[in-house]
Length: 456
Image 1 (cartoon, rainbow, N blue to C red):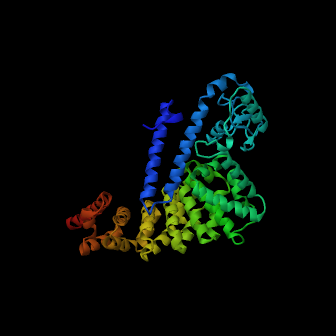
Image 2: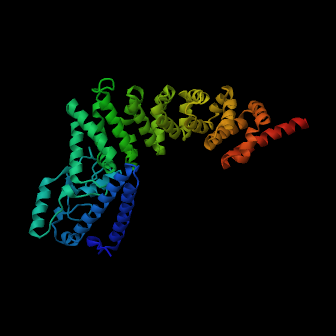
Image 3: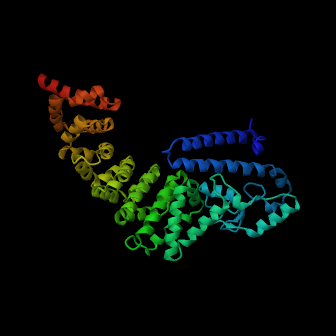
């Protein structure tokens, strides 16, 4: 049996280490055995290695904690953890805390000093080098050794060296244009290649505004510096993938307006990535409301109408997600979504994605009225008849069911379709479970109407 080293004296740590090792073995096996492996597997393997390293670092240091806590002077203890500080930092109020514990306090949404309860003017954490040196000297006198901060790995797999590099890149976003371009490009690459690097942006409320400064100051319009805009917008997209960042990113005041500007005036890659960022951010219901109120649906619909093939999937996904909440359906209808969507569906363009949006919008009364007046019913029936895609048929019959419930004038078109092709009854027999329900609902209404006519 393999030795577990520093893990073996702690059953919980040992169990976690074994799980990580098994996961690592699985990832490496997939990379080695599959010539066409996904690059994400390498990122996952790297993250797993970081987690293993973190366990080992924590385990080595934990055996010293009890002795340190008992012996060390009170001024060397973190007010939050009551333990010897490893990485003392100064908060805006001048109070000193251990970095991981004050970061946890801030990430929980607190914007006050734990000791003084003062509201923080900012959340930048400044290393307290004097206290750090005093703690270091005390540890030497006690025969203890503080870990090297440059090698200290936190729960996100980030070292202090990573953090220092990150802060230096953010500082460059306020310097000369060449430095801004270089920093923006590197931040884009780092947040793509290192998922853990995205977490650094949640450590300070100032990080995202610093990233956006070249765009928000109006010095680097998209027409003048399109590559800089593209790198910054793509970095925002990368950040938004991290679940803990979604709320922070969306609620940073400059973000949504800059994404909307990118949708209107950026390169096609910038516009596509701006749409993808809005899609990712809209995973949270609170963000759906915020994005909708900001007016972002209009530039999304305009980009949808333009029809750039590379942008369509992300644009359609963003509109679909946003329209899940009722108030955004009304906004989409007001901003002309229905006409754009129907025109493209009737022309056979991006039918899969657009039918999904139309099915969501169909619960809005104005949409039902416009669908009846626009010739959509024959088009939807034709798609059911000709399509081989079960999901498309399901969306079409769901839309037709809503029309059937609200607009009797369209019953004749449906009856004629059924008489000529048996389209609806075929779906009632062979469709998905939802499609069968909707088709049977339509057939029951049509049959009831016929029976009433005969009775009369």
